[in-house]
Structures are given as structure tokens and as C-alpha cells.
Image 1 (cartoon, rainbow, N blue to C red):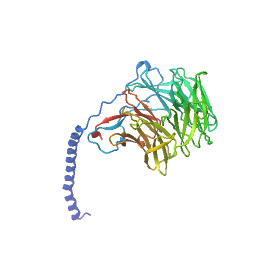
Image 2: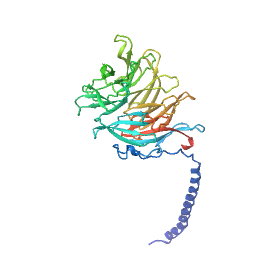
Image 3: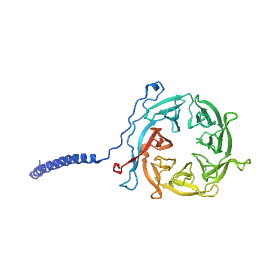
Image 4: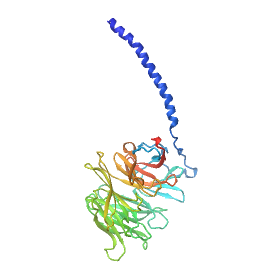
Amino acid sequence: MKTRRENSQKAHMVPKILFTVLSIFLLLAAFSVFDGAIATAHITPGKDKAMSSAPSDIAELPCIPDWAKRFAAPVEGTYIGPPVQVQPAPRYQLLMEVEITSDVFCTHFDKGNSLTKIYMGDYPGNQIIVHNITKNLIGYSQVLNIPYGLTWLIEDLDRDGNLELVIQRGDPGFGGHGYLDIHSAPSWELRTRIVLEYMKIYFYPLAVNVDNDPYLELYLSPASLWGFERAMVVQYDPQNDTFVVTDDLLAPTFHYGQSAAADFDADGQIEIITGNYDGYGLFEYGGGGTTSEYYGLHYKGLISGAIPGNWAISLRPKPDNLHYAMLGSSSFEIGFTYQLLKPSGDDNAFEIVESFNQDTGYAGIHPSYAIDDDNDGLDEICMGFHPYRKVYEWSTSSGQFIHIWTWDEIDQGTFVRFAGTDLDQDGYNEWCMVNHLNILKFFERRLLAVQEY
């Protein structure tokens, strides 16, 4: 049985409850008024690009249903840096995303048809697929008459006006051999097959003119699961109209990965940098003279101070017009580190001019990429510090690299391979990046007022 005191206490609580409910109601009403006022103060973003359907004259081409996603969606990124109240801040907008069939892809801009083409292998279908994207971001796909493989490069290697598609294939299972196959447009016939015995790990071929002749050569770093590695150059043979291996060197232990190539020291000869177990090795191609000392590919030794890794790129990030090399590495002891090097003036010598490091508690792949995304003549640098991917650029006013953008790879996926494209053909490069889920995303830089952040 309730006592008189308990009933009295409950009676006193009624007006308090009514007062609380009324206060909440008034606060909600006031919030809705102020929210509307704040919203009108926001700067209106630019007009979004709308998705269109494919024109009727290409409707008969085989297509992948629903492969094109919504365009101009906001990016789940974070702008990191000191607040700037006067100058606009960069922002990267998702222009388009595409579900593809492999994390190895290559791109080509078809000037004649004003199309960006993306080539990739489709393992379940045992075929090669090319996605075609118009400047209006209309997408359609084709199946090429080529069996499945890893589509590393699309280039006119022999300079005859037709493209060559460089594909890596291999025998089934852990045994067997690897194959470097070169197909030529327009029929996509197999021009050359190079057999690499027991080498089936990613070749990472690189197209570069090593000898200053009219043709493009291929440099590749094939390796095997049994611990032997090579450094190879494949050249076009105009007399026999085929491609042949002209240089084949025994490489250092665990020589593997993405390589950087340029005439770094401006001596007229191409240097190539590839990672290995002890650090990063330097190769040079001598294009003059008749002795072996001056002609062909040579291993020059380890780059002093370079931390072991397997991802190197060449870039021009500073206004001194020099080719730099960026060498990536990662370990649980030091985290992710990217070393920026330039030639020191001595023959084949480099000095470390900048080191980007972050220990996030992760270790693993450490890919980087560089493009000029704002047409200032300098490359911006994109580096992975999983679970983040960050963009840096050179600031001429401060004389240092500044951090301008971060993507969260928990939301976006872990990006593993990159290219530069201009899908909408507006004269500005996009970051074309595929994640571990085989979702290819295209991000374009925008200059928006800082109030957007």
C-alpha cells in the first residue's frame, strides 16, 4: 500500500514533467529556425554532372549491367591542414566509380573517338574487357577477342600507329611458367610471347625509351617463388617485326615490384630503380659505345640510405625541373615511410631530401603515385599510410611540402593501383585508383571556399 508521502511526491513531479516537455518543444522549434538560417549561409557547390544513357548507335555492344555508379557524389574524405581564411582550399570530388574485374588495369585516351578506355582481364569469363567512357561520363563496355590475362600496359611500342596491349599470363597452379604476351590492335593478334620459366609473380612491366631510338622498350622485374629474380629489357626488332629480350640480368635477392625510370642525373642515360631485400637497387642503360661497359643494362648497386621496399616512382614535385625518385617501405617497427630522393651531382648518387613517415599500427603494401592535378607544372604526391591515403603538394610560399587531403581507406577501400586520367576532358588530371574490392574510383580536384569545411 502506498503511503501518503509517496503520493505527495508524485503529485509534485507532474508540473516538473510538463515543464520539461514544454522546454524541449521550444528548443526544437528554435533549432529549426536557426538551422534554416545557417543553411542559407553555405556556399552553393558547383552544378553536378548527371548520368546519361548510352547513345543508340552503341547499344548493341555487350555491356555489364549497372557498372556505372552515380557521379559527383561527395567524397568521404577529411581535409587536414591549418585553416586558411582567404585562399580557397582543395577538395577531391568523386567524379565516377566503376566496378571492374581485376585490380590490374591500364588506361588509354582515344583522341579519334574522344574516349577514355580502361582495359582489364575478366578471369571468370576468360576474356579481356575494355570500358569506354565519353566526356559526358557515359559508360559502355566491350569484350575483346583476347583470352584472360593481367593487362599491364597499353602503348604503341613499335610506333606504327597501332596500340600494343602487354599482358601477363601463367600456367595453372603453383608450378609452370609465366608468359609476357604482346597483342596488337586492331585485330588484337598475339604478336610475341616471351616465356619466363617458373616466373609467375607480378612482372610490373614499365614502358620507357631506354636507348633514345624511335621505339618504346619494356623493363620488367620477373621473380619466382623459388628465390631467383631477373631484370630484363624487351625491345622491338624492326627487321623481324617482333619483340625480343635484349637484356637479361641476374638481379639481387627479392628484386621485385613497381620500378621508377628516368634520366635522374641528366647524363643522357636512363636509370631504373627497383626494390630488393637490402634496399633499392639502381640500374642504368648505356645507349652509346660498342663495349659492354657502355651499352645495355647494368646494375650499379644499392642506393645509399634507402629503406628496403618494393614500390618506386619517378616524379617532378618541385619547381627545380629535376626528376626525383620516391621509394616506399613499411614495417611494424617504423610504420610507413616514403623517401624522396634527387641526384646529388655525382654519377649515379642520390641524396634523401624528404622523408614522410607515419606509424599507424599497420604494415603491408606501400604504393604511391604522382600526377599534376592542378596544372601548376608540379606533381602532387599520393601516399598510403593505411588506413589513410594522403595527398601532399609543394608550397612555393612556405618552401615545403604541405598535406592537403586525406582519404579514409576504411570507407573508401584500400587503394592498390593508380593511373592518371581526364574522363571529362576538361584539361585536368583525375586520380584513378582501384581498391582491394576492385572498385575503380576517379577523383578530381576542386577549389572550393574554406567555408565548405
